[in-house]
Image 1 (cartoon, helix red, strand yellow):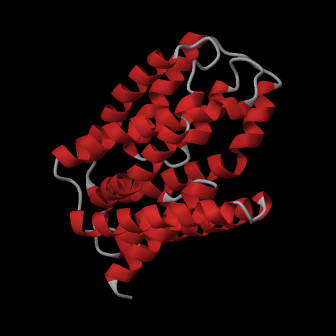
Image 2 (image 1 turned 120 degrees about the vertical axis):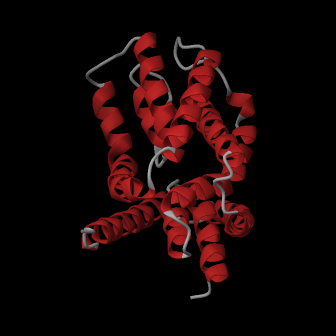
Length: 254
């Protein structure tokens, strides 16, 4: 397949997925790797390509911003910015061979979060509550993960925040979107400064992802939530299994 068509099609699908249910990086990252971009650079380029859509969502939610329980949004934002930068630097410090081995496990973690995160969050909320300092500590760890890889990090944030107090989880969408965008912003800045982005492929994917995001929003108004979620989970599971097969089918050197 022509690399341009592959990257463009992946961008359209990733943008639509992010608009519908999340998980766009499950498509954008493998497509960039299939197009010949090394895995670390592909992860950096995927983050850059999908960032404008996340930033636009954060802007759209701006009227709903506020504290998360008793934790001030400014504290969460500061912790997230620092953690996102650390995660991005860690990614750039990871050898490609090591990241290739780690990547399937990161995809599996993100797939599990997409599949079971909401249910796990409900289960935990019925049993535990955590303190604001604990929330900041976990938020810092999630921000590092967000800058390093970031798959389903928003769902992980929601699961943790729901342990603070009983509240309508929809009210957490605005701070979640802002903080995911903040972690990604620091990652994008780090990747650009480090010249880790493959700009030709990224520009194509970025443009396509914006178009896909618009189309996905239109589809989301008509498609059932169950169908969207089911399709997303099937795709993420298939891609995760494919990367495990890819990692273990390689013959060790020596």
